[in-house]
Length: 271
Image 1 (cartoon, rainbow, N blue to C red):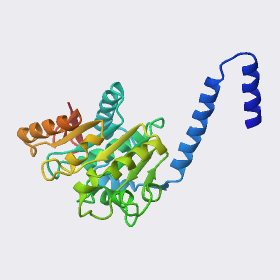
Image 2: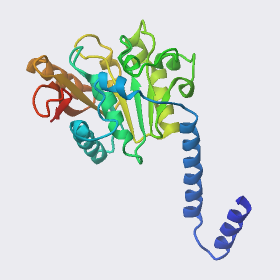
Image 3: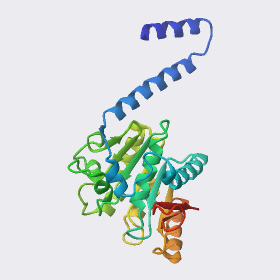
Image 4: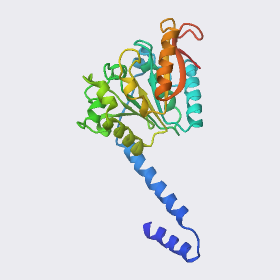
């Protein structure tokens, strides 16, 4: 095959044709193969539908209950594509707003778009919410990858063919320092280069409880704020919006835990 490609390029050169498009096409094909192999090397896991439903992860199969999440996904993607953004940080003013549930539902919704590749990384290193929802134990944590004790390929898991997830199975003692570390920025760049995701979602710590999120927000393209209905105050949203806008592009606010609309308890609004 390589000799045939070389012969074709030699013939085109002899005819005075530009061979650069052919070379670029061959390079892209090789790159696609390497990306596919990298994804296939990540251990796949199968999600328990009953466990997912108990934890309000409703977007895996689509349908009426997934509609609010799908709407959030589509609006988010439209805005990110318009601005050529790939990295989104999802945070909240305080604990209990459901940002991890939103992150995982977004990843589940994106998994139903086979042309999209998504990487979800848990950066809320003081809690183990994402690992608890998925039931993952004993794989190490994302901060272990940052500190070089395990590779991302060994620590991450794959959902289907197009979603990679990295969780924390142990709490970090110095999350703010890890998130501001240049090694973390290099690792994110490396993940993006090797796996070529269309979107990277970062499940961030709450903004008003520690400085953890502020230590990382300059490494993303945009930020999404999750507020809890009847719990998060307008003043808290205003403070977080200002802080987000000072560090990155402010994508919007999604209102979680609404009691109205479909009556399922899984409703989201976005603006």
